[in-house]
Amino acid sequence: MARQLIPILDLRRQYAALRDQIAAATSAVFESGHFINGPNVEMLEAAIAAYVGCSHGVGVNSGTDALHLALRALNIGPGDEVITTPFTFVASAEAIAMVGARPVFADIDPQTYNIDPLRIEAAITPRTRAIVPVHLYGNPAPMHAIMSIASRRGLAIVEDCAQAIGATIDGVRVGSFGDAAAFSFFPSKNLGAFGDGGMVVTSHADLAQRVRSLRSHGGRVKYHHEELGVNSRLDELQAAILRVKLPHLNAWIELRNEVARAYSAALAEHVTVPQELPGTTHAYHQYTIRLEDRDAAQRFLSERGIGTMVYYPVPLHLQAVYEPLGYRRGDFEHAERAALDVLSLPMFPELEASERDAVIAAVCSLDTAAQLA
Image (cartoon, rainbow, N blue to C red):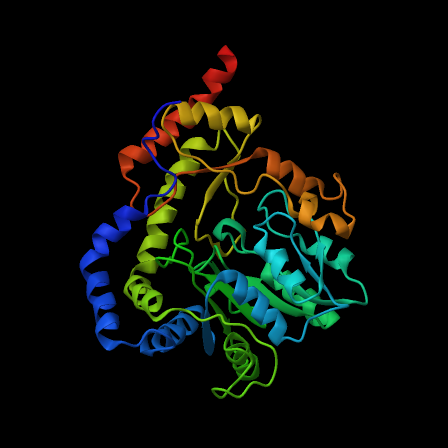
């Protein structure tokens, strides 16, 4: 196998551009001696909430905990059902099970890979309490349709925005449509820390206060605990780093979109390229194509030094951990087909034009390779 020349992601390039600012920000934290729930966390919480268009932000230690604690704050638990997509990272459903509720899957739209509102409607039962739509790959889910369903059926919405910070629908940023939203600051995300981190955003003051209590061992006052909580705090160091990065986020998203436009213009005749709903802005956390014989294509590209990834090869309803839910192969045909066909190409703001063009040339040459096979 050839040495990988063009990585799917290179975080070192971003760090190199911000090294001095990050050094100054982290040094200030070291000098302060304040490492937990300090001023950087508070300022980042306010900044992310304002960026998304919500009133409150609550920093936690991961995107998974952001989902988990948002659901707990909504009093969702044993006996309840929560609808989500089977084509996503495991955390989307894991958080539902962590509060004792049952994940209920609804198939995806094969064009966008996001949950299909019609399938949501069909999955609702008297036990359904909430919907967790995922903005997969940074592509906004159809929130207006989902909100209409939730309003008519009296359901809560927790948006999974782990991959989609900065994406918009009709100019409004995702994360501001539901009762609450969960963001991840995992290093590879569009706004990534140097370790784990996450945040719940909401415009409901009572919900934000409940999450703050839950993240700190279930107490609003130190050493006074009202319920069983967890230890889930965003580190002051990570908050300082994220505050350095946040002002660059919109420019980075535009650079991702520039790469995506070049990819789509060149590749649309060769593979299925990402589809965006009218009125939306994709954040392009991943640029994901779809093609026949995906595994052979991935090997071909790897031999030519092109880094790729499959997000995600096994739908959640076919994972061993969810076998007790009783789902079977064939239950969600679109999710299962996508898991066999999708392949994500190199996508990050610092990707050079020459690298982008090399990726395009390699993908276009798949046609010739297939004819010669």
